[in-house]
Image (tube, rainbow, N blue to C red; front, side):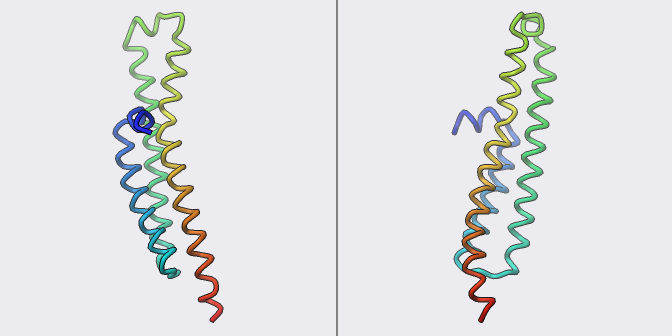
Length: 121
């Protein structure tokens, strides 16, 4: 987990911040279901998704900038493997962020399940 976080770089802090706030909001919704709370979780999830995209883009840009600026890497017969490793590390924000959002929305499903009986009353 620490390696995944480190590979993602600075954008991971935003993903964790928005993701944790969304997670707390989802737990609060599951504990006390209220349809008015759903929009907040949706908005926090969108902020997390946008942070994921920004993180992946900035990590890919870092790979695209760094590899050509290291002549020993760009002239290496293994340049493809170097770029491939950079690409793999660039996926860290997506892996981390989307996993976090999966948990958020699984918790939201519990809240929605608990909300339905209240609506029927």
